[in-house]
Length: 242
Ligand code: ZN
Image 1 (cartoon, rainbow, N blue to C red):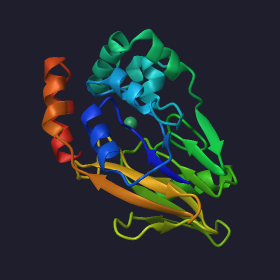
Image 2: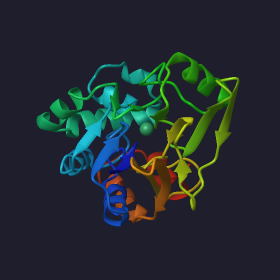
Image 3: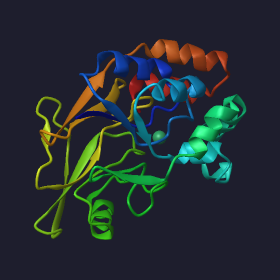
Image 4: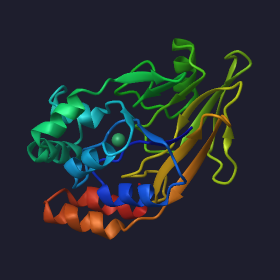
């Protein structure tokens, strides 16, 4: 089976559509959270994802939109977008978000938004944080999002060493016999300096994960955000991927 693994769509329908239109053939979607927040099309993103066989977990923005955290945890721009999303989201889609788990194990793979220790909030950006998560839970391969940066951490020599690996955009990552934390990067608001939408394809038979990138019409999302009065800084960052 081939699974489209994506995360942090953040209401960016144009980016999601580009991913769905160009991704290699897949059977289902695993979403690592933050379906909404920041972007202009939260309802449409949720509804489009539900057209597929979908497994999804909750992200910190989804959590915030559901009113489960103090909006003042978020910076001013994120908070503005979050409060706007609260008013925009219809009750059916709100119920859908509320039904999502904070983490889940599917076919031996663990899916969480942020980390094993802190499924909603921890930023897995360095080997020290990764090491603590390898020690916390005995998963083989876990998929995470949240940082919006495509990145892999590997635990080797029974956890004595943890290393960070940059994604190889040409060769699939081999998963067999390895302990890995894999972040496919963000569909709707990349932050690694590349504005193109990021996602990955898991091949459960070959036991590989390939990283992918696709350009989308950033200006369409930016225009929709302007029309909705969303913060200028959130609009600008989409074209630089920061
Ligand atoms: Zn996010």
